[in-house]
Image 1 (cartoon, rainbow, N blue to C red):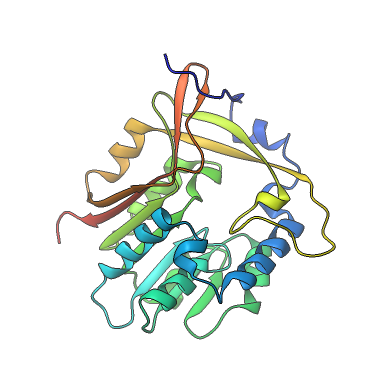
Image 2: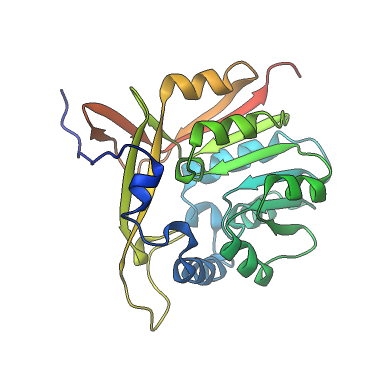
Length: 254
């Protein structure tokens, strides 16, 4: 068997969270992410957000024929994919980011009449008035129940669905902890002046591949597939854990 880095597993999300401090409610992480996002807006975002991931998002947005696409961006941080779309596919959007309370609050600094921040899917949908594309980039695996969250997003029955930077187990579901430096947080490396680096930890759940497929496949077919090659596979309890697949789906019945 090919050797992959190993990672520890935990019985459930709550057990892992006990080892992770504030998790994604970490205010300093949110503030640093905002500064980093503002810092890349004048750059080539297709490159800054990593081409395989950018290509997947842009492919999904191109599938929407509407003059003003309505996009629900689950876990979309401070809207980098909105700004990517504006840069590469300029038109009006209604782009609703669903995030944690701290990110949604700080999001007011980048929000405009096209980009809004919410803390629940329901309130985001109220503002959107419907949804053409559901977009979730590297976010579902950090929720307490990724399969239930994926099911909820699929249940919106949007014509198009983009699930990128996935975390999937080639076996049973695995609950792990991701550890990284603040300087290595998205969307780009580095730290604002005066900010000290530190270690961050978050629960990360790898959904069983067969459950991922069973949730999505009845309603959606794959339109495009790319791969974020920046983080290779892991092993946990003898199970291979795959990272970075980018999937773009379209409804089968449309």
